[in-house]
Image (cartoon, rainbow, N blue to C red):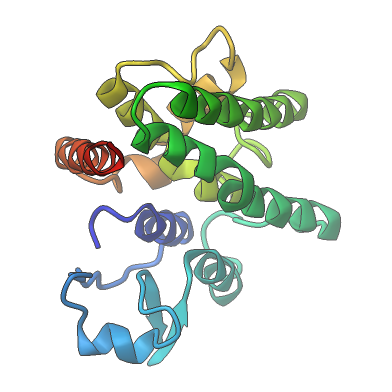
Length: 218
């Protein structure tokens, strides 16, 4: 599915490892028999088929890629066990703490509810800003794109789109200097820059999504 950030997470991981692959587009409104066969539990993308065996869920796939192509390309996970555990912790931070208030802010009409969602998102962004600033690296685990960067990567282009559509800034250089700098570096990184969704099409899609949610919440 061309708009799914989870699909791009896997594409970026494969790019880091220098793996050639065949990409098959999936229409989630009319799911193929292949998708239902390869991911019967969730019936979602992405799915990586390796030697005829499917691996589903983006976070699982990325770790599989690291193991299956160990020694190829760059490292995705740190070697140190504690650093690996912390990387997995921050990966979980994205869906558990960060993404929900950002989505709520984007899909809610103005007023107290949207203001509360914005403040909740800012609170979690401050946690992320502090982690990145304290690390002192270009990326979350060092000088190259790693597991945490891949997990957060979709937000590097999604948040600016949300801001443009709503007409309100969420991540500014004044409040989040490290995070803003990271967003630019991530999108310019070699494994990422040639594997991005069509931005104008994605913006139209997000605009329609927001209009739908706002209309149906009235």
